[in-house]
Image (cartoon, rainbow, N blue to C red):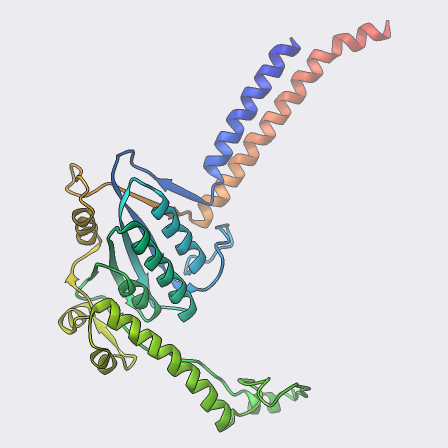
Amino acid sequence: MLKKIFISAILLIAVLCFVVSLLKGNNREKTVTVPDRVAVINIEGMIVSSSDAGQNIFSRNEIISSGSIMRQIREAAADNSVKALVLRIDSGGGSATAAEEVGRELRRFKENTKKPIVATMGNTGASAAYWIAVCNSDKVYANATTLTGSIGVYMPYMNTEELFKKIGISSTKIKSGPYKDIMSSDRPMTPEEQAILQNIVNEIYDNFVKTVAEGRKMEESKVRSLADGRVYTGLQAKNLGLVDEIGDYYDALSAAGELGKIKLGSDGLPPVTEQVKQQPWEMLLSAQIADMIKSEVINSLHSSLQESTAPSLQNATR
């Protein structure tokens, strides 16, 4: 009897572990078991420079970290079945540092694998998102109505000194140098501080322009004439040389398949592998189901053990 209960318990635990791994996984990978395929990386929302902390019910869907994108690029590079990479972008931009980090990882992917990269932009592909789209791509797609470009850098600053005075807030600072509290909002910025920050902005801007010029094979002077911070429609960008083709995600996917010499499926498109974010309600529901299964297994085991041990206890009392 005990042997039977033990075997049942092992089987139930194995099933539980399998179900939990399916339900509570941070990402679900859609994999088509074919020799050659395209890896699709979705870049949606504000791009921030941070580690890949994983996804939970408190994750903000409108933010994506450079760490997450870089991890997916590395996974695609290590997967021998991946013959091309598609960057599916819908983002208004974000951190220049994040764009630089992702761009460096894309360059490494390109140098190490010699595989093609195709970028496609949905509603928006601007600023840092445009940086990522053009830095190492063989082809860049945009819809005619996509908002793209916004080649430039800005550093926001807000002076709340007068507001603080009205509500009776004052501050005293003890600092090691004259510029240690640069950009403090409780006082006006000095001309010297503004010059320091302007030099930083100019340096990042120069790097942005150089990246676009190299990626689009354009003269830097040409890029600078377009890089005043304005956005362009996809059609305008195509006419200016900022993107290659007017088309959607499926056009980009088809181009990636062609560049990667991948056999097309019955739908005329190459097989893909991509990681899809779970919605908060999906993760919450998955966690609840997993907990219910866990409780049911524990209760079942507890009841079985009680039944099996009851006779021996009775015998011991005789």
